[in-house]
View 1 (tube, rainbow, N blue to C red):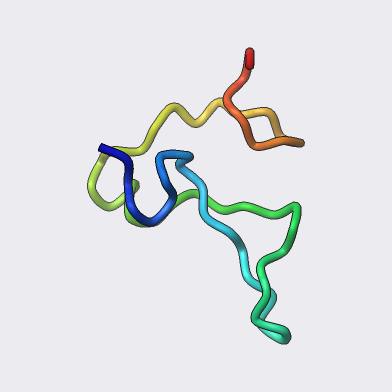
View 2 (cartoon, rainbow, N blue to C red):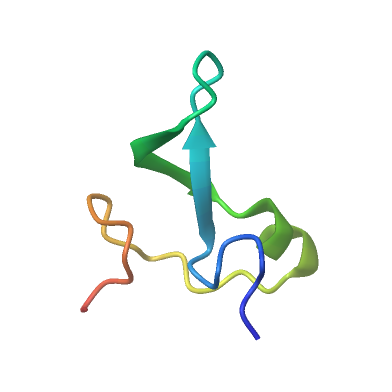
Length: 54
């Protein structure tokens, strides 16, 4: 079952406080996954934020 907050990616969008829009290239670890201990593997490509090897 995917986390409804991050859709199983482990990351959520980081929002610009001025415009309220998500930054296109910034992500932050999903708070909900961290809180529940269901965080997926965190080794990600720093550019695409996808799991390594895909």
